[in-house]
Length: 418
Image (cartoon, rainbow, N blue to C red; front, side, top):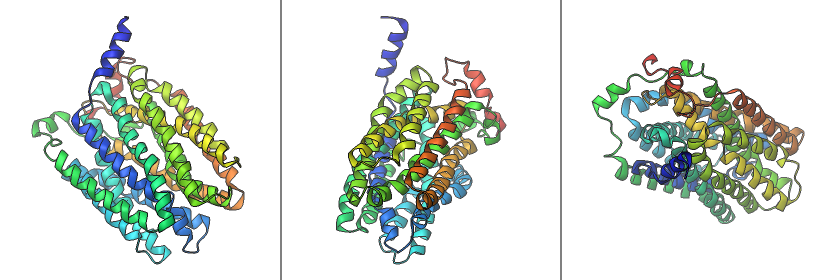
């Protein structure tokens, strides 16, 4: 057996820290609840006698709130700690989501989703900071992949159950999601309260947080921002906002079919996430990202032109396979640029904000296109956004430690620049 093969086998046998698995399990439960609401929300909003653009705005306001609050959430997490930020953020989302079940007017949904976005950015920044801090350098891709896999496996179950619940009551998924999040809060506090606190010496050794403006000078970080923006636009924005409407209004299928379409996409994600993380750790960040962006761009771009329900599921699966290859290398690049000696600071917040910006612009612009030109044009634009991100990755250097000098990677965002 060659040296490279032996290294790969040894790497595969290494175990992730226990705290990572706690975060993975939490992401699974969060995603189950999120998936419950996803196929129901657009149709629920439409029941208030509003148009497609207004329905898409409810999706966008959640991301807009996350975008606006992200810089402040990073400071709050730094001041009070990652675990408190994580648990408080989850509580905010739980309460506001459960309250959506009792909304009687459109503006109430907008307000509740906006408040929910504040909690969402708090627990997302906290979870990502914990993940990157606790994962060993050589296992960043795998840890990111498992975290995302937990989220997407939950999205396989959630939309199916949510579609069934929507037949019973369109308000029921919101109550169930709120209850699931409260369960995550309880489990997270019990299992992480004594295992995520840094000592004063560790905090001092880490130094000040890395700065966004410094990281922005690294082309690999810019590529990660572009991929995050495109992923937010296509996956967390347009797909959630328009696929349920496309299935019902263009394909003529029941709302439950939209849940199956979202679940098939999530299944494709989960299938490739399993291999994308280890691949990014062994062979580099660029190969899986390039392939994933290319496949995702092609499949997403043609989705709006598919008229057969079964073929629609097949194309959704292919799009999910491509999207699953993007997440682990994208997160790993951000950790590489931050460096092992620095704390994420505004670099993580900027990375999240790029995805949220895509989630805001995507549903609104695609909703206008779907309403005025058609679903085909709306999804074709999604494909083009993903292609732009692909170009940035073609131009970006490799950041995997061992492929390039680690010092050169960390010099792009020095810990002492904070």
